Image (tube, rainbow, N blue to C red):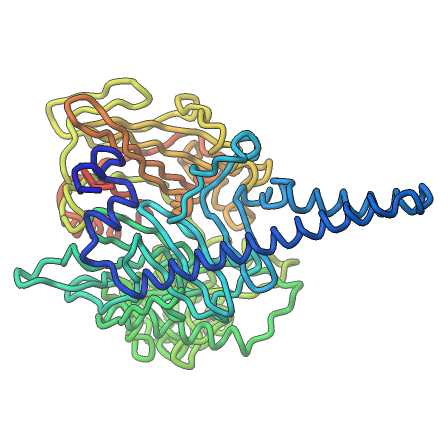
Length: 595
């Protein structure tokens, strides 16, 4: 079986071709032993099945020899027992998990989960041919061990798998393979926060060893999306914990940014273990105050901000403010007068009402949305120009009062924007210009690079793929509507799916009444990475069309979509976003990405 024969018959992207032909020099005992254990478990399951078949035959033989001496009731009882066993052994549906649309084989201490989605009808129609079930995309659990075999473009949601299949990965000795390569983790690369791998002599990332990119999901759990790259293949792990090294993939953080992030998460999780929260209370995600923000008393006096205790936790180089950092801060140029007499606010004397529920560096964090609870030495409140930050914390409040009443003057809605970044590779710091594209098959073209579009809700399409639509309907309640927008340019087709809340969250209701751009909706875009997908389609002349699926939680009651196409350096764009206090949801398309 030569390389040419394998490629001609199976293709370059066949898992068999990759493992045993193109990458055969990387085959090792660790992978081969794991496969041997898998086949041993399969044989064990077959033996268990054969034992049941033998039990059935014993029952039948006994009935045949004794039926003349048994009354009908006794015989019928035995016959029912036989039918139950027959159904258990031969009924294909017993292996089919309807909640996950997957096949699960198990016995006392063995469980094999085939991760490819399967249609029950297809399974029943092909009960003698299961070649459509991949042996390279499964989980094998045996004797407190777990071997995970993944292939190119597999997406594994760790939390979802644990919940749906009742698995505790932390209690198992785990090995995870991408094709035949064992994934163990790596060290963080210089000048590339959250990117882990090895460099070659030319100081470029090695392609023949796995590299890892961690994208934090939030700033409170330590969970995120881990993208794993090996040669031209990619594996995606959702809800990966960088603190707990999920699935035994150990990422060694070395950069200041990643170390500060881990420190913040570690402190937050410690507090979560020791803090009891009243179940009747509500929880909101609020933004930390940054040192460079414009904080004033209500008269316009400027608060001089200096972070000391919070200086190790930074958002793009700007530290957050903790309790002692703001308390007793000076206020300058306050114009307040009473009866013509100057009575200026001179310092901040009370910050209790603006604090986070959790501590960082043994102190509470100042939260922007609750800054009005702070008081000056003259008894007046503070105000701040709201700026979204990456550091968000829980704050507990009385549901009878509501967050809207506590900070109704502080939450200010900004224009929600979604922005496409088009690049030639993952590390490009600027963006490729786009001069023409199709938006839902309508051509947009001009001499200058395209920049921004305002798209009405009525111009979005209903989702055509019923599998995707049904998945959204299953995951979200009836209080959402689902729309699709297609972008086509070069050899890329981008399908954007929008999940639009029909009702406005209480925290935004007051601000929405005063919001000038109500057609843009209340809130902001959030990309839902668990639904991300890239599909390769063959074209003529040996070209390929890369089809991207990106899903977003959209602003509530959105009637108009503001879509931007990034131009120039990302660093400059991000700086402008901060200056204008914009909240932009960015997604990246890499031209000609290998998938």
